[in-house]
Image (cartoon, rainbow, N blue to C red; front, side, top):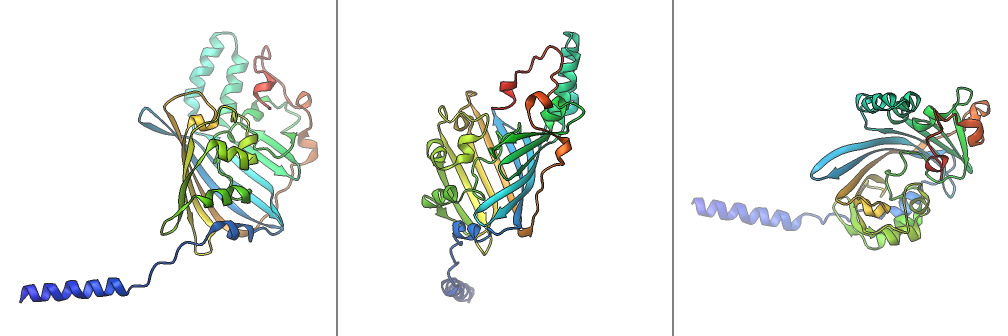
Length: 295
């Protein structure tokens, strides 16, 4: 009897499984994202960047912000980045510099590495404050204005290398070789292929495109409408054209509030320095070259 009951149960289970409707494939996000391009609307994001070296995984930095759309894509943004560095660790280095008769440089280093960096892009200009900029800007100016909208700033170099919200061509390229999962897609893209299609990747300070090699593995989760909700990427430091071997970087970006009303404004003009000469008051013997700050 027990064998009969067991057989009937298995047969019933098999029938239910066979009769279950097939799961619909996730919606391709390329068209879904472009449908969001409307003046005064936008999306929020938050991301965590981790670095893995010799089996140890540490959080390098955190970023969050809002992207504002126009009819053709992202037209403005307000992003804040914070390095995951303890003030006590930086102060120890500051003490060493103080012993070497560089006390001002030590204080600058503490401020630069422990203060959040904010990057605001409006129109064809970018405004920077916080982080390194707070340490170097003189007391009369809180922001520095830089022409162009390239992802400048200390925290931008290690941010998400795949700009799937602001670059439709990049997202379409990813989708060409992608494989579907139950809630999204995954795949790989080489540094060379990404540099050809992505202005963000090519123009990010700190990334040496000529030396970039290797590939980025990525996984994208989307909602029922095909809108991205989570993008995870992982890649060796060689993808950024950097020399340290054995270093892997992973970035997890989460998107929320698609279609939310967004208005990003430039900082007050009186608080903005328009040239480096006007803005920067270098400490001590001017030991930080300007070429290391702005490219």
